Length: 271
Length: 285
Image (cartoon, rainbow over the protein chains, first blue to last red):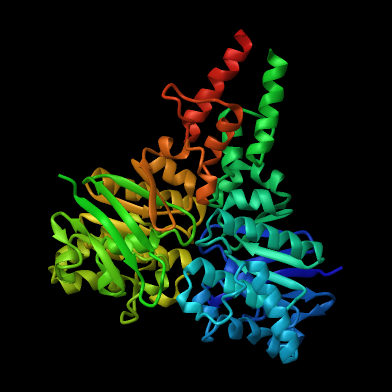
């Protein structure tokens, strides 16, 4: 089983301000959402996982190996990161060249890379756009190009930094499917998110960060029942959960369907 | 008189065959908060850029019909006249940063410098906008060193300080944490209360339902519906247009609970109250 063990991880951009103040947890094959306030250290954390930043102290151990001993190019074969801003990631003139770049860099042959890229473009719904310049696509599709570029590398770990930005309902459904399918392939899936409804309905685990510390780490139902802690972390409950609280329910429901089922049972029992 | 009048607007980007905007007509009044919703590719960003003439003057392409803001035809008039009336907050804040300023404070001042606003007045406006958006502590930071959410608030501040009559925003809170996003909606709502006209493209459907006076639903370049959030989100054909109603509306639709006007509720508070009386009705029956 793939695991990433994080031991007392600390990081500071400048000597006086510590951004991560000692994270300790193990990431495994449960899909994990990282949630928290802007500036809480979420993006910094995933850059550390990818080896783009080096911790000031503490360790990140991927499948038994301390990543401090592995070069960034080697790590790239195992750990893929989709950037928050696709413009930071995309630099080729055509969609297919962009998506093939990663696979070629990690040693796939031209044919393998092309095959993997076509498959990835299928998954993100951009098949047929191979020859398009990524900058002629809207932000939502450009984001999908950046996702395809990582999927095509077939890494054991896939990290998304705010994948739902600019996505409409269909786009979010597609992301939901992508995340579930990566999980079924036993990959480690980690995603930074601000969309709590999406977290509630897609992820198996949620880690709440605030002020460089881990406040909560559990399944979404337990995490979203802690209204007090969420408030402290500048988060809010999913919309359905907010309704449960407004109605004074003790149980936490995460989706409209769950709520409707409970409501109908409750109403029937009162008749 | 309406502040913004859009008359049979049709537009095609250069070297494309499809109309990105296809016969849009509507009137928007001063002080209204208009939410623009629709699936990706529906024409939302294009329409928002058409409200200040970037479509067609910046992008070129084929254009028909007209957009006037307070009597100014956005295609015919100069950018200098128009940008005192209308401000646009870009979808990707990265595209809005000038790249010519070293601090957040100077970046926010950029538009005001071009307007030739007096220094004291500039400071007053900048301080107040930074406070409104809770970014005062970032004033000496470099614009490109900010996180996505911080950059987004800086971009918004840069427009607010120019005090345009109409503020057009393309997903202004997409990178903000939930509370930060709620704060921006409240701040924008306060600007509306001061008489500003707000046009916002947004996928956060619960927020649009709670804050908009009217919602425009676009699909395939056409205006499918324009009305109160309740009227638009109670439509039966939302899914056909790639849009999902707010969670509260979905729940009440499944339960068949409507308000007195026959619409499904769109906000938490209305839904709570309707469900409570429905449950009591259940008890009595």
